Amino acid sequence: MQVRQPINKGARRSAREYVVCRQEDLPPGRMVIAPVGKFGVGVYNVHGILYAINNYCPHMGGPLCSGNVYGTNLWDDVRGRAEHVLDGRIARCPWHAWEIDVATGVSVADARKRTRTYDVRVENGEVVLTR
Image 1 (cartoon, rainbow, N blue to C red):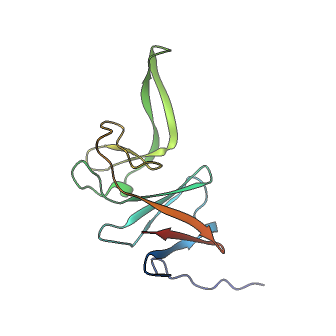
Image 2 (cartoon, one colour):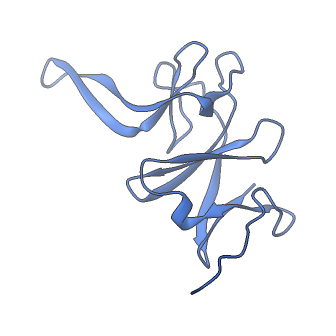
C-alpha cells in the first residue's frame, strides 16, 4: 500500500509558485481556495481544465470564490433569444451576484471590470499556482 504524504496547501515552492492541492483532490466541477495573497485564489477545474482567479470581486470587493459556479444566459442575436452558455465557468459573487468568467477573469455584465487570473498547472500530481 502506498502512503500519501501530507501536502502543505499554500506552501511556497519558489518565490512565485504555490502548491494548491493534489490533482486528485480537484476533480472536474470542483474548486478550492488557495491561501495565497491578501484575499486567496480560487482554483477551478472546469471540465478538466484548470483556471485560477483572485478571490476578490471587482464590483465591491466581495469574496468572489465563495459563491456558486454556474453557466450564464447571454442574448443570441441570430436566434433572437437568450442562450445558456459557459456552463461551469461562471463564478457568481455571493454579495451581489456579479458573474465572472473563471477562464478570463472578465465580468459578464461589464467587460471593463475584471479580476486577476493566474497560471495553474499540474506537476508531479500536484496542482501548482504561479503568481
